[in-house]
Amino acid sequence: MRVLLVSVDKFYYVGAFFRRALEELGYEYAFVDEGKFLEPLKRSLLHKLAYRLLGRRPLTYWAFNKELLQKAQEFQPDVVLVTKGAHISPRTLVMIKKETGAFLVNYATDDPFNLRVSSRDLVRAIPLYDLYACTKRAIMGDVRRAGCQNVVFVRFGYEPTLHFPEKPATPEEIERFSSDVVFIGNADRDRVPYFEALARIPGLRLHLYGGYWDRHPLLRRYHRGFALGRDYRLALGGAKIAVCLVRRANRDGHCMRTFEIPACGAFMLAERTEEHLELFEEDKEAAYFESPEGLVEKVQYYLQHEEERQRIAKAGYRKVIEGKHAYKDRLAEILNIARGILSDEF
Image (cartoon, rainbow, N blue to C red):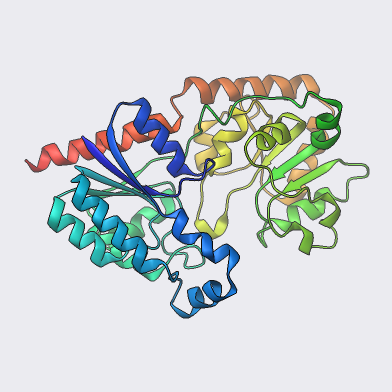
């Protein structure tokens, strides 16, 4: 099976994880990096303005779609696997299907109907995909109603070469990364009350990594910038408690951190959702909360119960490592589903 992967090639993106998995599993594959076409958005005010005026299309939209179509024509894949694909023109997908006959798969890392992170092109393209692998159960009905015939639930995962236990070792690392509570993620509006509640605990060492925390007066002093690569592991390894919140705007039942936190050996205190409860047994493999007040209560409890905390962290780590939750397993799952659909058609 020849696979054309279309994604972003940054080392902490799902696309990079799938690319590594394709190599490990021995697939013949080609790759189109959407990320290089999005770089000007970070540097150029003109590109940012055009992005808004063009309905969330970058100025490089046409060059990206041209390269994607050319790569498909040259490589002649059996499967085209797209992660998200917000900037892929429906016309490009039609042409790829016409000229290669490839089976088109979307691994939906975000809610395609949440236009803050999606695009009109992505919604219009839904009927063109042969398979939609959703990371959120809540969007599956909408994807079916939008016209995709084959819709399945495939969770996020973890990347073993990036997500593994590592403690701060040097005095500088210990000083920088040691905390009582860590959260890695952006300051979404509905997340802020949780950490404003934690900030009222006297003497709590709270570390917040991600965007926009510095915009909130009460939380600004806890902002520690961004945690990528080894810093991500050290931030988790240096924390007594790692908080996991889903993104409501994406209709998440779980998120990437759901697997990454325990894979890094950290104690996970997660938002209570049905999907979290399916994955980790409460108070044995993870702990849960439902409100800002509940988060404060659980943080205060587990800071006083180190042995229990460590026991849960170890059990959560085993659950992830032994449970076939790596992105290599997710890729195999997606491609096996694709094979099954293809075999039923012929």
